[in-house]
Amino acid sequence: MATVMIIIVIIAAIIIWFIALRNGIIEKNNQCDNALQTIDAQLQRRFDLIPNLVETVKGYAKHESQTLEAVTAARAEATSAIDTSGRLAADSHLTHALRQLFAVSERYPNLKADKNFQQLQTELRNTEDRISYARQSFNDCVLNYNNAIQTFPGNIVAGSTFKKREGFAVEDGEARQAPKVQF
Image 1 (cartoon, rainbow, N blue to C red):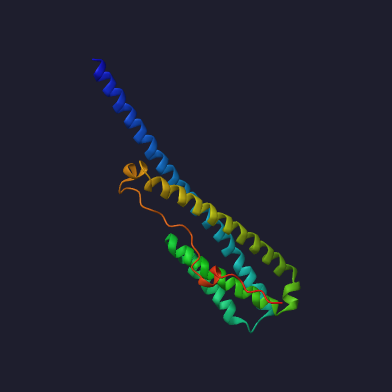
Image 2: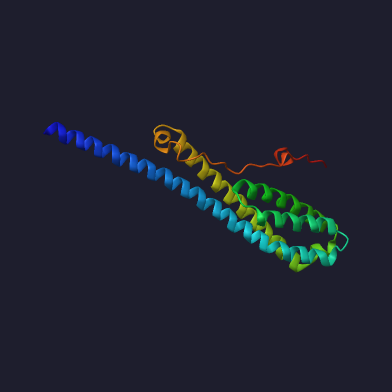
């Protein structure tokens, strides 16, 4: 009778351990989803600022239509992306287009002095900082989740049910290079 009780206790402990480990993996997966939603919220904030910024620049830089069209096209690409990798790639294109837009603003002193433009630029810069932080948070969540499903004993519990997630990575090769500073 005592051996039966010991076996029941051991089986119960294994079941509780399995459930706790599985719930931990699910929690880490949900944290990744939450971090990705935070990125989406900040990207939406940026998407909302861009039309105002483009309209402000249009008033000063009428012949810079190619740059403005590139920003508008990149914004459209980013808002229509469906999966995570598509959103992150489109986000990279949009960031590049915005850099070109700010380079255009350097050629127009009146535009740089415009209060509305300065305010939009500051808001966009703050939003870019938030996006950067959200990406880092997402990558941290992905790391924790991937570690949980790839290390023992989590890999046994995860089995084929949980798939490895991809974090945010810079796709623009130029961004990986150290900038050249010349005086």
